[in-house]
Image (tube, rainbow, N blue to C red; front, top):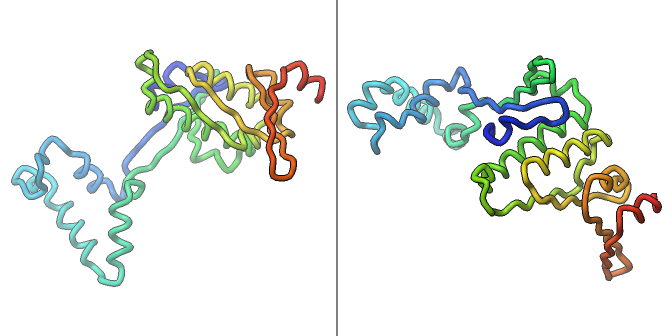
Length: 210
């Protein structure tokens, strides 16, 4: 994901994802991620020598209480139990902030930006767009940009285009005027009873209708 974001900016900000082991689960995380001495079994001598204490602690946690067995197993089977995710936001002056620490102070539109950044970076990685070859590039957003203002919507669409996506953006009529200046094709879906109609309209027509 960070490969997709390396030279990209969303407006004046750049984004970088971080993943760190949770302090209270670090020994388990390091054991799970240590493929160098694993070689197919946790009971190999080299693995036991390095992570024996963590293995003993793990089995002690699992067998500690029969009533809590299912809950404990769910905890240890969920990767989110072992790691903390965060997004580092860097502004055009080089100032950095951690999204986890500022999210509650931001507006709805500001908190939506990292969501779109994360989703698009994930699609970029999944589609392997970094290979610069012909590949699937379609992304679909329903109820798109519902909390963003005009400037952020513009930056979001520019961000999609710069990453090389072909986007289908579905939005209610109340958001049309904020989106139409930045897209190439506009389709209006209308409903009459049990029948639906789709009409292609030009940007000029929509601007005049607005």
